[in-house]
Image (cartoon, rainbow, N blue to C red):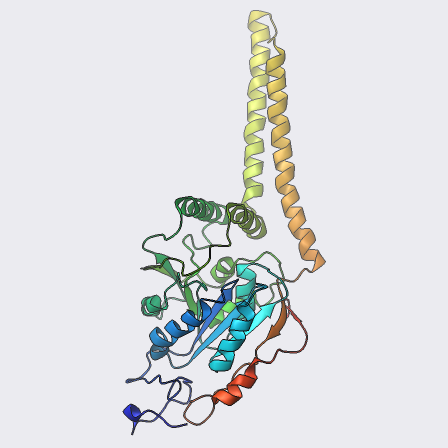
Length: 370
């Protein structure tokens, strides 16, 4: 495949599938090593093409090699067909589809395990995380930083969703403790070595941010400009946000158990104080503390604390039960065959061979195995 005339006399980079392909040329040397972009997709067939176009325009000139990995999280609509079409059109696009909807973080884990380049970027499928802001994250990923979050300068969601999201993040940050970064975002750039923290994960309840925080403490965040959602609406309802927070808190922290223990100690001290009050009143005044209301209120308080404690302990036992059952975080239904970069200057496979790369891999693969 010939190279553009603007590159005549220059030596093409064998590692970059964009050189001389699809009309994309690079006037100067790349500033970063290869980048894998992992995008969980759910019922978004209309935006994936735009995501690819913007990544090609804004990100490809900045890296030696670029691959885009779409993960269809059991959409059940035209999302997988759109991914297959993009993989046939662009040899640097790959995709996989899951048997059902497992959740955003589970889908991310499936994609991260397919990434092969030194840097990994995760973005949403609705263009809220603009590809033109990726250079900001790349600039922040210095030698002493392993993970960069892009935090929005202005939230682009409804007020109740912003309030619920903020409350959920603060609750999780308090419960999970200082080992987990307090300002996570779906717009992340990190080094591939961090994925090793998820090598042995087989839990159906996953938090990518917790796993990344386990791998490194060299984390920072930078303000970036988010956009309005290009299409559709968020799949995170208030109920799902609360459920996700509870799963993460009980799955990755024992602080709630300590809180319950401390709360039980406080209630025990209150009980001793009430007992002392009753005894002192009887000794000094010669009369008992009368009233059914007092007794009923005290019993209700102590019974409520006991039930709350049992509920928290029960959540942890339930998580242990699911782990012993071996429930996988995801199961892959099919995937497009990974593209290979040709040796003819990194031009990549020609369109005819790229069209053959969308055949599904035979048989489902379980997410517990790499």
